[in-house]
Length: 75
Image (spheres, helix red, strand yellow):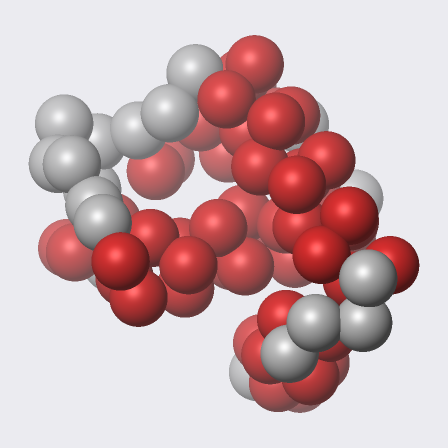
């Protein structure tokens, strides 16, 4: 989790991977957006935005959908 620790700016593929993990944790309903943000760095409103963005990408049928399934399988 070090690559995703609070206070670290992430970009590119690492950001995409982090966003998928944030989305998966939110989707599972195990943690509140505030808790996810505390663990990974972004504010709760940023977590909400990430969730919204990933949902949109899934609706559009982008490759994100298969990556989300892959992340889900690891939980």
